[in-house]
Image (cartoon, rainbow, N blue to C red; front, side):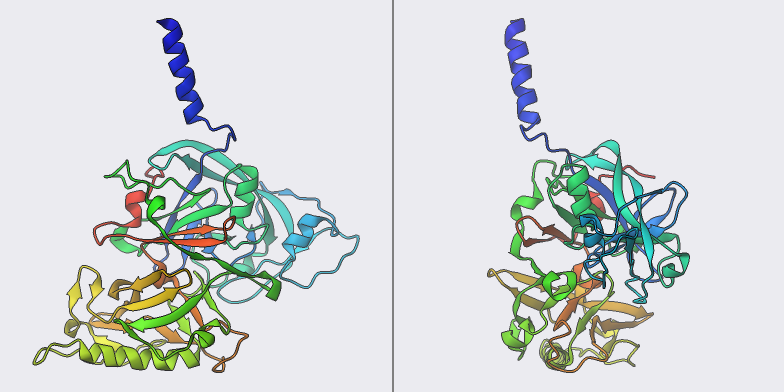
Length: 411
């Protein structure tokens, strides 16, 4: 009998511990800053890093506990640190150039060994605390201008070699991908970032792995063109099932970029004008005969289309406005209802959270056709898989928030 139990125990251990010995994913809470609408994750000693899914580096203001990474300028790591900056191969110590995603400012800084304190997760609960090592650029305090209070730098989550996902994949032996659920803020609680992938379980449904029901579309890279950001291919845009008159060629010129730097979506002029015209037309058409019509309100910068919120119907999915659908490469759709397309800007006024790009000409291929902003990505599970070069999307029912998947211990 003892031998049977021992054999059974050994088989269970073998099932629970894969041959690859790949470690558990690393989980961190994501918080929305109400003043800037930017998102942060914890770094150390109560400080935070701003989440930048287009950022190629991790950087922080210089700290006492950071050990210098004495890398020569000719080293491969130094090349990675300067992939998106003019770089000169010489015999000096390596210098990186951290970048502020809000102001656009950059500064020279040395590379240091930094450390995060996070937790591993089995997809249901936190398992153990882990010290995560990362190579970061040491930046002057002036580079923190316009970032959320309490933040000390930026966590770049792009597909580049020194972004946080790639570093965690190397040091923690996890997959080179991450799951991200951006919070709406307020009473909805925190969001979640999971580095290394799933499984992903809802607290009230511990048996279903939500990563198994995602819609996937190719995740594109323009690193060869000097951009570390994540892009997707959009074939068309529809407004309440009616196609917006913007061709696939126009959308492909510059592409569609994903960004947490921008609170709202930015559209190039040749996309924006047809888009807002289609929205106005669809909003007028959805009013029942003899029913109330959405009443326009004074525009509030930077928005053009604003409305009296009391004249907009309210549903479980946000304001009752025309849904916006992006037809993605691969045959999948990304549908945005009022909760991801409208934003309250002041008491009684709600605005369409799509803004025209400034300083960019129509058809300028040097700029994205569309930049999908933070509001559009909130309360949606997104899987950035850099190994398989694909983006997974999983919308959640109205009664679920990112915080229902927050496996990190309460403070």
